[in-house]
Length: 470
Image 1: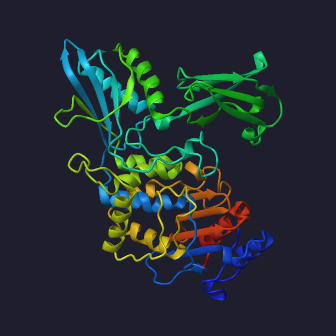
Image 2 (image 1 turned 60 degrees about the horizontal axis):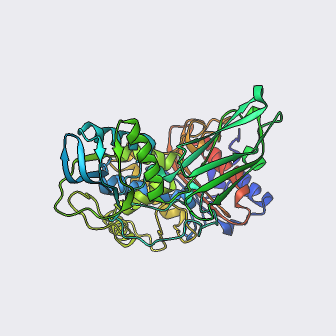
Image 3 (image 1 turned 180 degrees about the horizontal axis):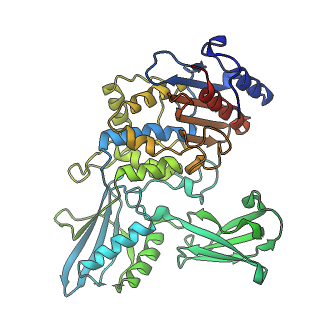
């Protein structure tokens, strides 16, 4: 546990000596950091170092997106997913196509997609003579390359936004050590018809450690059909690791949704005679069923606690359209940026250096200064949506991306903070309740090739602020 060595007055607004020394040991210059800390209710910062420099915040940018979402949309906001019967339905048989139109629901995950199909089955429909038509037309966004950011097109954090995004197009590989068989059992959930797994893993006795570095996962698209994949697992997996999971996004939306819909629909006693195709909903149709997402207040917990990039991007795209039932115009990145900037103006927040590319922080272009993010956190604390916003943040040594951080310190359970990490970028920002019961906002950015080593310095600052004298 770090102790307060010098009073704040000894280094007004500067870094505490212990933090400065740690950064020097790590060869991270002060010019590569941006730090801002201020007690709520005070007019002057406790620490402000390079606080006005525009820096890449990585996933800490989600704080802007989620706070804006809560104020612009409201904590109870839900995303509709519309189901239409394009044809006559007689005795539960649809003589035509079933259409599903999405409006960007960030949480149409496996459980919610199962619920959607269950509710569809409750309408009495059990047989679809035509096709399943997927309507993605609510989004008008560029068709980007999912591997452009870091050359990892099959990693789920690189999934691109879709108006009808089912289960993030994710297949989760679960690893189970089975000592009795001296083997590693592998289960893929859900397992699409178009994915085959080749398991060459060897079970070992050693410590678990960083288990992902001890195995390799290769993805081979089919020679004839690029949506057929073989996932090849090589390397070792320790029995001490217990159950572990690894997520991949392989098929395109049509193939993934087809496989999953057919399986879940059949489990509900339904049948589909046609295929799954992309299309648009005819204007004259009335919905057969409307499925609502969980409320925004619940969804932002997943965004901030577990740094869900694709959910953050879907939320960002919603900011420019608002109530999609009334305003059916397509969502665009330009509309969302305009909505964010207009909202900031309405709150008298002027952030001229702010660059928002997609709202998730998975970007090399996004930037904000530590001082301005601190001002945003101060504004959020005084907002009616403050309880929902703060409760969405990871809690030190308790959950989310902070579950294994600050575990043996007095800060445990007293900091609600968002983390951020990219190559050469680390960030930490949020709220701390110090030992005297004072609430402090803290922002710490590191943009440097040694940023990956900066966690100790960040944690030192948080603990110093916790222990600072009255």
